[in-house]
Image (cartoon, rainbow, N blue to C red; front, side):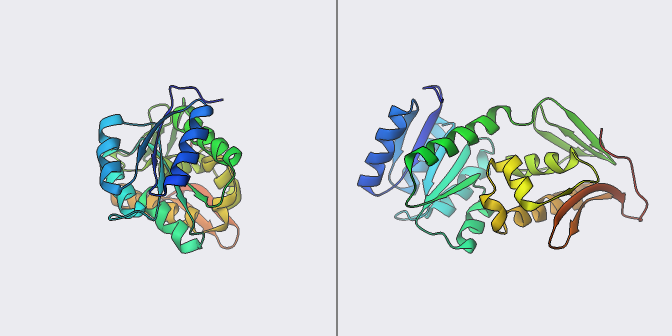
Length: 240
């Protein structure tokens, strides 16, 4: 169960939904703050530094997508869970591309929402820490969530780092999207969308800028496999 130490900022313009969320999350032991517009959410996120933000997409003024992007510009650590009535795949992809960690579609049950919140908070605090992974010119420090290619730091968001670490921890093993979604997001739901592919594309772009190796290889229709291969074609070392 969560404790009152975990602070949640709810960003929702519907009074009824806001009241329901605030009441139930408070009863579940969370500290709760509220914002009804994107501008207010940005101010409160800077001031309060919450552990997790529940962010509605449909807001007056700036959309939840825009708010998420602006928060991510300065804070890669806060967990962001999008809440919305939109359930089309392209809407979910837009949310994840903006930097969201999870996505809950209305209507949802409070037990499911609390479980998702707890899972995201747990991963943000303890998931996968304490190991150094090395392959080719890549170094991943899963205790401090840092990544380097050679001497250059890699600019990765939290979920991108966790996804790369999940792949690098099982070199040579074919990993399905559903398997990766369960490990990184705590449930397989995102595996049915292009979410994994979006994150993989970003990871590859970051590595291509700094590394002389290719690491993530696609098995069409099946998933991804991690193996360090120099761009000249010869294989390199494998992660420990």
